[in-house]
Image 1 (cartoon, rainbow, N blue to C red):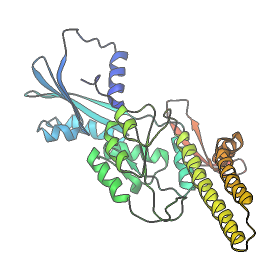
Image 2 (image 1 turned 135 degrees about the vertical axis):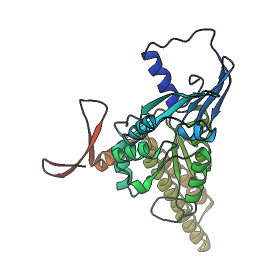
Image 3 (image 1 turned 135 degrees about the horizontal axis):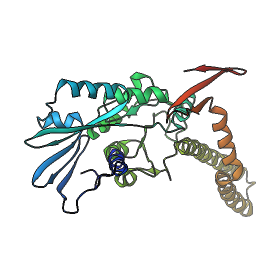
Image 4 (image 1 turned 180 degrees about the vertical axis):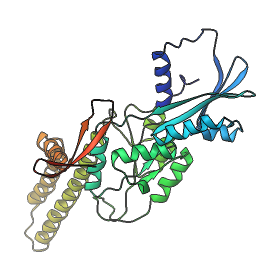
Amino acid sequence: MEAPSSHPLSACLVSAAKDEGVVLSETVCALQHTILKGEGVTATVDDERVYVGNARLFRRIGMYNIPQQYTDWATEWSDEGGTVGYIGIDGVGIIGMYCVKDTIREEAPTVVSTLHQSDVEVIMLTGDGQGAARAVGTQIGLDESCIQSQLLPEDKLHYVSSLKGSSTDRHPSLYGGKKLILMVGDGVNDAPALTVADIGVAMGEGAALAVEMSDVTLMDSNLTKLLFSMDIGAKVITTVKENIAFSIVVNLIAIVLTCFGKMTLLWAIVSDVGTMLLVTLNGMKLLSPRTIAAIERKQDGMLAVRTERKKDGERYENLNEVGSGDLELV
């Protein structure tokens, strides 16, 4: 059921089943396999319609009818940050449930902290339940008001569309005071929102559809590359403005000299070709190791939050420096 899907949760379930030694018979096959966006998957197995997905799916098809004990378990798992799913058979009902918990990437809290320090508003859009979304958001340093959960692909699309058009002039842009919306995603459910955002960024290890719909694709899923891409993008805008300003100044000088009869054909050619060469060289500085090193030093200076991996699992704590040798646990 899950193997044909490209969703990270599907890959996790397949990997967990292999670790448990689950072996499928070669005679078993899933026919009419369909991905239900934002809900799960469905297929026909041995002439029976099987569903695997979240509570939204089973409520929609009228199959969410389980004992109170299992409902309490699902609530408890969700409050602990897990994503709860179910497996059911048409005409039989729900026959199983599972819980998958996201592992926070080591660099995620520091990346969010750096974006906040850069005066960038960070909002998390997820299809996970409210409990799981809140748990993850808290670990990476987001306020509850910046966490949007239980979103379908069209919900993400409408939310990103609603953000566009608000104005601010705090960030480099060639067209002035419009607030730019950057959407980062890695799944099929993120593809519509990636399309409507001003800048769509897909993680390199994400779904093929997300990569195809995005404007920028990071080579892997390391979030620090997002910071680097944003800084180099701002540097490009600044360089373009420098080149435009320099070209205008040189042309104005040439016009003034021409009006006073001081401009010869030779100097006109020199000014034109010289401007082109200087603009080109100024643009090439973006490729220099010095520029790359300067951006990396800037990022290092802004990373005021350090992450420390705990020995007892894949959990991380944010430590803010508050003084010489003193640390405040957040």
